[in-house]
Length: 351
Figure 1: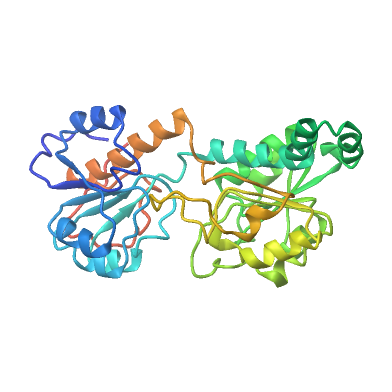
Figure 2: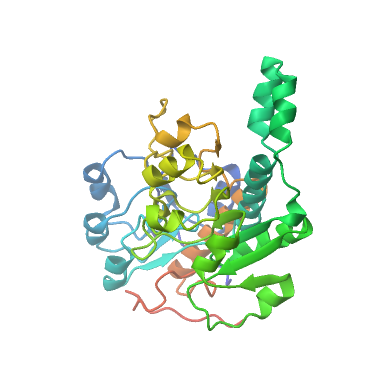
């Protein structure tokens, strides 16, 4: 990306400054691109709007930017999501107002794949139960439970979605000798990548009926909200395991809990929840049906995190924002709303 001459004239806000503090690496990049950044944390939309109304650009980690907030942005040129998902941003209204919405779609694909496999292995080897058996000194029970483990090379993993994180998961699963199925919305897309990874592309019903582990790798939108309801979850192979490191609201959590209690689904590994907002800033023991089940392994939306992914995230998000303020289109694939007509003309930079 072309080095901007001077961007200090622009009013740039970095939201979620308390929940996700600005790192030293971010500060280095702010200085490199001469960005004058104000850190901000607000608890309500009403508090947020007066601060953002006259900004030129926004960094956002987890804050919601609904219609009324977007409509208040009188000068904003770009909303740079420090992350991947943009389901909390009213992208349609931003597009109408000529505001680019950018993200870093590739920043944590390896971490998400690693976390998916960690949950899969934890479920396959019943590690939480083994730990509890050790604590209680219940050696006989532990051996009895372990006798139900299955060799991974005899198992099938179904990937719902076949983007970057799913492909990286497929590489890891194939290393364990697993058969891997995958499905995607556009079945007409070339299967060359799937073929190279030894992945069989199929339809969702086939995947659900044949997979011993089902893992979600989908964005959250109006089409995928509660896509995995009771009817769809019930199509899973009896005794299979369910893994979600994507978005909590892809799943009807009450239906999932019911099927787990009934042992129709053998277990689940969950990193993202719809009914638990781990980014609210409020920490207390949640009352959630999945957290009471012994056959569920859960983590607090951390699949994307690592030292390396955080640096990639910071760099990509800052480069996206700096490009727009410098008069250039960001890196190809980093604009969520590529059909937008920018408030100020942008140049497509030559490679």
